[in-house]
Amino acid sequence: MDKIAAPRGTADLFPPESARWQALEESVHRIARRFGYGEIRTPTFESTELFVRGVGETTDIVEKEMYTFADKGQRSLTLRPEWTAPVVRAVLEHNLLAQGPQRLYYIGPIFRYERPQAGRYREAHQFGIECFGFAGPEADVETIALAHEVLRAHGLGVTVAINSIGDATCRPRYREALFAHFAPHRDALSPDSQRRLDRNPLRILDSKAPEDRALVASAPTMLDVLCEPCAAHFARVREMLGAIGVAYRVDPSIVRGLDYYTRTVFEFISDDLGAQSTVCAGGRYDGLVAELGGPPTPGVGFAMGLERFLMILAKRGVGASAERRGIAVVALGEDARRRVVPLVAALRRAHGDLPVTIDYGDGKIAAQFKKADRANARAAVIVGDDEVRGGSVVVRDLATRVQESLAATSDDATADAVLHWYAALPAAADAAA
Image (cartoon, rainbow, N blue to C red; front, side):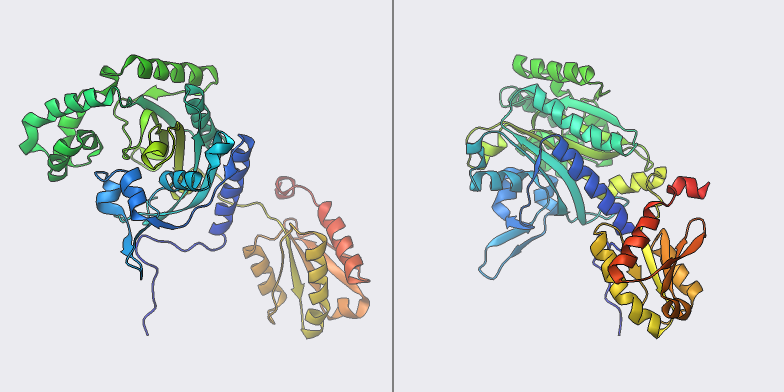
């Protein structure tokens, strides 16, 4: 019988790779909380209407990439292709804005039907934040600073590119300018861009079609037509980024692929994956809450792709080898296994955060040491026939291969003795030296 493989564009996670994911997730949880953000979790699927109204029916996501299906009640549902619209829906449904401004963050999967490639999957994972209730540029800067801190904490060198795409006052002028630029060349545009020219010419700026590149490159920029309030807002964002020490460059080509963005948009770009690659992107969306039925409420946020983030870390050698940690219990023979089962339980009770593993098979000591090495254990507790008869255990530093014998009395007392010995081991770097 043929094996069943995972669907194309998805990936299984298992040790040791899953440990890298856990370390990254723990880090972003910690940084988000430090900035005053609380976690929100929303359903994996939502009403399709949420994304059509919130993301925009002329976007690539809605037109081409959503996983949409009818349930048994013939309701149209869609697997979450992005997080912002679901977060806004939850904020409105549970009336969170009545409590004042909201700072929320999320970690979890998104689903988009697109061609799988390096760092891009059909089921991908994102970390992101959403900040509601602050119209001033300070919130834009806080959002960029939080993303910058996550990247800085992992030693990544990236370029911060920012732009302003205006608001409802100046955006219509920009649409007119774009239409005037593209319309004389309608027949030279790609089929998608021809369709979008009349519906939403801003979407042409997102086109990756080769035939559109020259026309997109010569198109007027939003910065040419910003109204005075939008221009002042963007100037303050640039000023405050400089004040907090976040280097940036202005890139008028950044428009983002979703209709809800207004004013500030930004991307964090790395060249560690070959061609320039966006690691994190976001911006302001002051009209989205009202568009989804809520009161007029400013918002700003970002999303960061975790697969791409981890690929860059791996390429740079960051976190490539996890620190040795934990204890592998090695039992040699049936009597030894019977003896160590309660000892393993006592070790796990005594130190809830320390990994304690055991191989219940009949492998020889060398084979069990290999398994301990694969588990990245720092130390081993060895019990054989001699130790059972003599009432002792052997503890071995797997980094230095130095070992000694400890008296074994009650399980709890033996666990305490082992953990006391473990706590005195030299740091991993010192042991390696």
